[in-house]
Amino acid sequence: MSATRKAKQFLVVIIKLLIVGGAFYFIYDRLANNEQLDWNRFAQTLERKHAPIIISLLLLLTFLNRFLEIVKWKNLVSYLHLISLGRSAKEVLAAVTAALFTPNGIGEYAAKAMYHKKSEAGEIIFLNLICNGIQLIIAVVAGLAGLFYFNYMYPAVSNSLALAILGAIVLLTIILATARKITIKGYSLQKFGEKLNTMPKSIHCKNMVLAIFRYLTIIHQYYLLFLLFDIQLSYSIMISTIAATYFLGSSLPSFQFLDFAVKGSVAVFFFGILGVNEWIVVFSATLIWLLNTVLPVTIGSYFVFTFKAVHEQPISLHQE
Image (cartoon, rainbow, N blue to C red; front, side):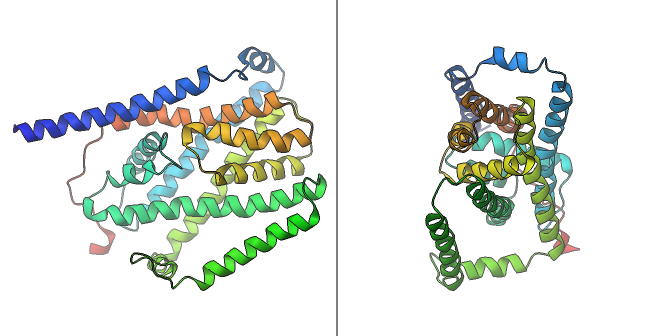
């Protein structure tokens, strides 16, 4: 074996160790240095009669959240070639690990691309953009609806400011629609739209349905946790507030390992208006982070360590 190849393999091992080691360091640091995490109070909460049922439902939604993402990715990649559910799980979980300490999870794009041929890297990034994009659109639409409903029930801002925000959103949408032909470094919204139209409608429809169900699982994870802590609020105001805080928290630039802190900070403001204890809000955001990020990262670390570049030609649907 040549010295160059040995050096390359050694570098790959170092990168894997940095990714996994960095991920677990950030997880430990966030948990060890958060003074608001009172696990004794949480243990007392678990002694309530309804706790086992809620915990069981919460774990089911946790599984469904990541499973739907895996199925969604498998569906999108079928545009290029067929992959198994197991391989889709490997790519998604490894990508979650790689994305943990990159800004806005950008490492996810590179991680997924590495599981495919270099010639397909651009297509994989495009598909991942669609995968995350549809999830973002749903979060924005539901979040805005929740935000306006919350403000109607518990006025946090004046009606004029609320209308100004809505007007700004409409104006931004119009600007994006009219500027779709503007090209930047060879890319434009029009070309992006044309690329979308090359994909079968069945893939888009399935992607939309899976994204909606995944969003519902995430929102109801929060809802179940608030029920666990015996928060007595109506379903409509709870869901609208969760949707609003999830949207606003996701809109702020951050690293995934800080996700619970960002969303928690936004949630504290809104649920504080509803009279919910700050400890409950922060603890709920942390538990969601543990279930939706830390748990997948733990599993994904194995796939990062066992990663091998793909050299074989996949079975292409377009070559049939």
